[in-house]
Length: 73
Image 1 (tube, rainbow, N blue to C red):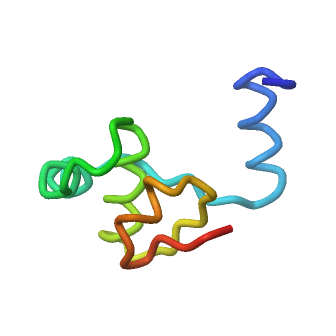
Image 2 (cartoon, rainbow, N blue to C red):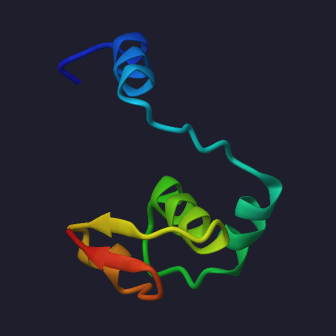
């Protein structure tokens, strides 16, 4: 990464981004997803997008396969 995690957090806070915590419901959502993508963190992002509800923008074709709120960036 071009900046440290500490710097990135400071930039996000300065920009007014709201941080999204991982909730138990998100973990349940991961469990319910079909295994179309091998990356557990990406599946967590998909579950969060569906639960909250939010849109998730990605260029990852495997993530796009989940449809429903997952959109091409």
